[in-house]
Length: 357
Image (cartoon, rainbow, N blue to C red; front, side):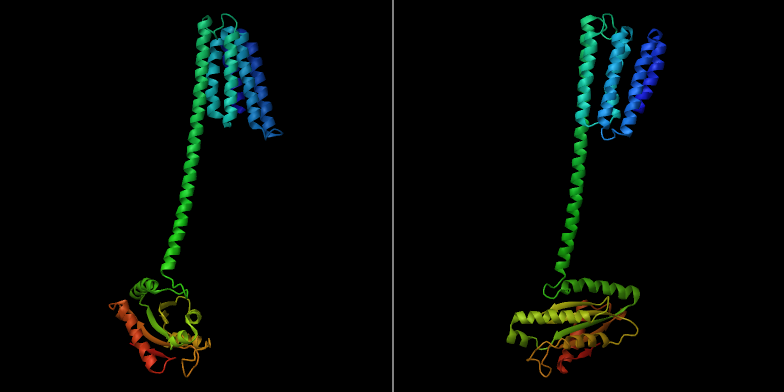
């Protein structure tokens, strides 16, 4: 709207100075255009704010009618009017954010008014230059101009649709990437988790021990490796079946986990064997963590008649401590030391903890 008012003011000054004999008509028509644009602006800002395209459409129809009117009433200004008629579609295409259907409708109307102007302009009008040939030339130029603008509009729409499609594909790619990341995380978790107990498995243990080694080397930390074995677990499977045995393993795994502090971690090493990695501080006794676990499992009071003299599920624990002096040893050497301590606990009567080297 503001652009239309500015153009009306500029046209008034330019055309009135070039054609003083037509100054009154030029001023009147441009004033009408400016008034129409102002009313349209007020309408769009107020009661017609839901219909901006319709108001702009009406304002440009008034501009077209005023332009054609000048050519019809003042033949000597036909050349200037012809230039306006050819340039106006380009300006509209660049400035107005119209919907495609509205833009094409206005282009068709503009082309129709241009052809009417060239067909019914008075003889001698510069709008039609030299007779029929001039009319044909200007009409052809107008049609070609409209075709060019429609083609440009279609190209813009196609480009916009392509951009939208690329954006949609990028979004879909991002969603697929997130889904793939989640799937990879699930696979990684599944690969390092024991399905029965929910504890980490031996693959997870190997990964975590590399972190333990790094902390021992960088920070001088000390850790305990605890090897656990449920005492006479085979008797449960023989007497009550493997389903009952699986239930005992799950309950024992929960009891072991409940006995640990934040940062400690339990693993199912295989069968009825478990392994625990505990970070030691200066106040910790080597037997503390093992005793907490042993007591927790015994207090489950899970029946095991084949485990005399206790009659319930118990656990034997072998413990070894590792620090910077043990970094040269492989993981298997650490675990073997804990396993040797576990063997001594079994030999010593079961349901007890034994500390090794």
